[in-house]
Length: 188
Image (tube, rainbow, N blue to C red; front, side, top):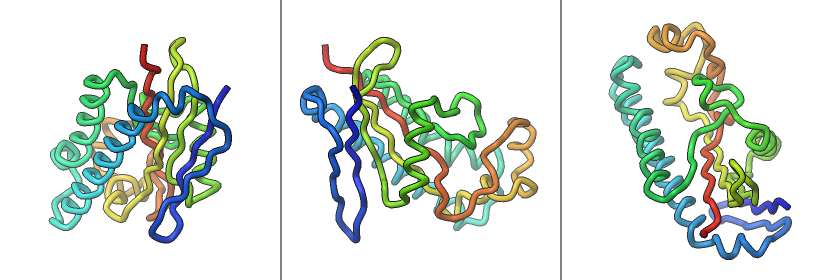
């Protein structure tokens, strides 16, 4: 059984919509809340680092990637290790095949595309035979993202070289880039 809880931004507030509820969602509340807070922190970090980088006028090169995108991914993995989560960024138009969305994430990304106000959702699900809650939080393209995710012909050379099968280009500001995905296993 899957439960869907979605957060919509309306004006300056958030509205929580519950489609179905499972008792284990309530039991997981605190643990999932911690994952939500961590993802919000990481997205703010991503946005700040990218905006700061874009303002400097520095070239979008391998070194810039190491200062902007890599710290977010590393912090996400550290949080996952410390808390027993499984976390990754997922997308349909991915650069790294390890970030390809699984079927469940594809459905969530489709919902995000259909409803731009849908900011995040949780699903009761199983992963590797374990029951838990999966939190998915949209990632939107910001102007600073276009340095690496804009026109295919304008991508930095290191991206074209390191990711020959790159699908993560052709975006515009406001497009859905992908989602953060955090699986929080049920407490033993």
